[in-house]
Length: 235
Image (cartoon, rainbow, N blue to C red; front, side, top):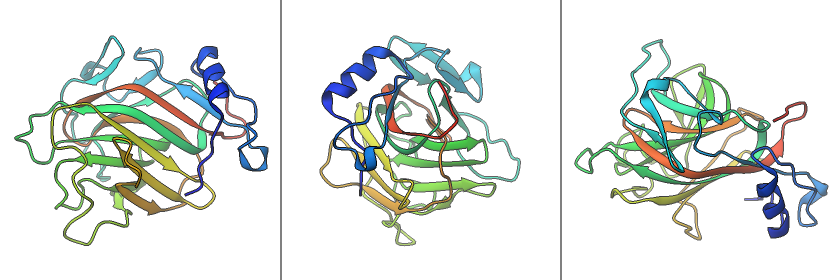
């Protein structure tokens, strides 16, 4: 996969400048593409949950404290999530975070999700991190496009998917890379050299990022995204 990158020095200067900092074009970026790093501190000023009462902001952690409720509006998709509201919408994007599943390990289908290219409550991509990989909606890459979530990852065989992403109650590093031009998607867990899940899809050209769960609960920290701003969007 082709990844947009900025140099270490530019990352540092962008982080100091704040959540919507725009880095100068990096020498390593193809076609002199300008990239933006969006950092999302754990404050309600930076996140917009579907249901405010289900969320808390504890130190550097964004916490979904209990499961959301199925809206039962004809589109099957994650029940509860919060979207990062600061910074521009991004097209090419790399989302990095630490996540933890707070539901008991005895619950086989427990999950958290990372969202990108969010354009509205019925239009977005998400990566589903679960300890179950034997059911269609678990541990995969999905697109929601005004219809029930559709699984698009290459690993799904019809009966089993990629190895379980999370099987414990510890923190895990996750990264989702999306190339808007090719539609290539790669999902990494714990700094693995190879992606756990891959897909190719060009349904959405840009949007916001977020975190949540399909029907369980968990938390994230150090949530950030680096990518190409969608023209005409601001912080």
